[in-house]
Each structure stands twice: as C-alpha cells, then as structure tokens.
Length: 358
Image (tube, rainbow, N blue to C red; front, side, top):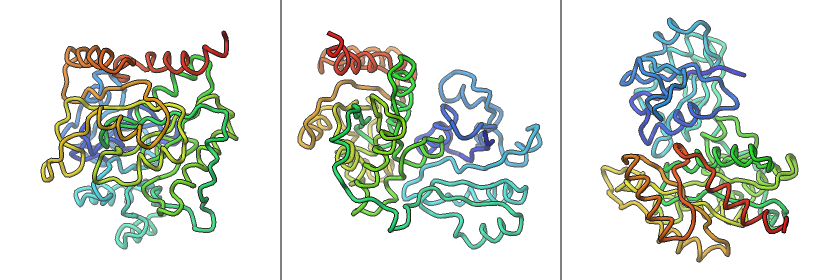
C-alpha cells in the first residue's frame, strides 16, 4: 500500500477538510502517515475527528513530518474540497516543499496542479509526478446513457442528503462494510474525488464530467461494479442535494443513473446554513420533508432510513432527534459514526431479502 501525508492546512475537522477526514476514517489505497494542519499540530487525527485514536499524527509542516516519520511518504494528498475547486494559496509552500523532497503530489481539485507552470516545472526538476484525478476521460472513451441500471438484478441504493458535505460518502462506506460483514455481497460506487482517493474500485468524479455524458458515465461505473463483482446490493455515494440551489447535477444524476430501488437520506440537524459560502450567502439548510418531496417527484422508490450528521450536537441531542425522526417518518434513524449502520442494514435486509426466504 502506498503511503501519504494529507495537506489540510487550517481545515481539518471543518467542512472543507472532508477529504482529509475521509482518508483518516477509510482508505484502501493509501496508508495515511499524517495530516498537515499547523492549527492542530501535535494531536491525533482520529481523536480530533471522532474521539478515537487513529495513530495518525497531525504535523505543522512537511519539514516537521519528515523529521518525525521513520520513512518518507510516497505522496502528498491535497485533502480539501474548496468552493470552485481552487487550490488555496496557503497550500503552495507545503506542496513546493514536498516536491523538493521528492514526494509525489495527488489532488482532487478542479484546478489541475499538473498544469500549474511553477509546480509542474518544479516536479520535473525533482523527478516526481503530479496527478489530478478530478478529470473526465477522453471524449472517445465516454459513455452515453443506456438505461442499464434498471435491468440489473442488484438492489441499487444511493445515499442522498439535504445538503452538500453532510457525510453521505461516510455513511455509504460504513453501510457497505456492514452489509458485506453480514455476508451480503455489496459494492460501493464513488461519485467524488474523496471516494476515488480512498481507493474505491468503481466510480467517477461526477462534477468533472460534461453534461451530455455525466449520467451515462455514472451508469457505466455502476454497471462495471455489477459485472465485475456480481453484488446483491450496490451503494452509490450521493452528491449535493436535490434542493441545493448551487448544485444542479449531483443528486439528479445519481437518481437517473442508478434507477434506485430505495434511498437513504443523510441530514445534519444542527446545521443552520447550506454548505456553500455559508458566511456570505446564508442560504438555510435543507429539510428532510422538502428533500423527500423532491425525491418523490423524481423517482418511484421509498426513502427507507435517515442517517444523522452529528456536527454541532451533543449525544443527547442526537438521540432525541433519532427518536423524533423514527416516530415522525416511520423508519429507522441513526448516527452511523457512533451507532454504526446496523439499523439501516436491518431495514434493507427486511425489505429486499426476508420475503425471498419466506
């Protein structure tokens, strides 16, 4: 497994640092050796995120990391998701330092670092690679929509949400693991840069694909998972929200491409404003009721569970919301980062597999 430092200066355990958080919690491709964020240096990344030690230290700089680690990492991963996908100017010194120390760079931003004149020249000088993963394939390799998902025998379940950056990918990964642990072959399809950086076997950087092909490309990734792993269930990572005014392709594309049999809905109850220039635009966060209305308008399948992002909430507040949602909506609710995905796995098995045994 390749090793990596994750650059997340000033953003770890904040909304923009979701890529770094995702890599700390789950990574099939990289062994994460450390996080770079001078505002939290000296702490354990797992303790900061979830109150559990992960054995992943947070360093103040590339220089400090290299002085503390027994071995130089293979990669420096840009661990933020910024509005517009631009590289923060404050990240450039760390990237330059990594390149000078012959560490490869990998980024999921819209701004392609391999085409940056300064960084590309420096990389060439020191013999390292810069890889941008948020790119679409060449036109001749892309796929148009073919209505493939509706013909699959596998159950397709997207994890949608009421807002961007609300934990949909994390829920998807945890639920996939839970179902596989129970002996139900389940595949995960990533739709964003973090899932791809984590090493997902199937997926696309959805927001990097041109409109004519975006549904077809995601449908093709779902079909590839189906044909390769022959799963009984396919979990698809959600993007944005149907109700989010700044994102037009995410959730709608995922619904069209997956032809879902059921949907799990992720919500952050304590979040006041939409994730998108929160301090400037002050767009109210989405609601469960509104999202369910929109889902019902677009697809003939049920929402079967609600998963909670506990950001800004005490455990007591989360438990109160769980009870409230279960009574109001008549479906299981849980905080998968604390409770696990058992409740959601139970309802999936009950709905799609128990009847076959009877």
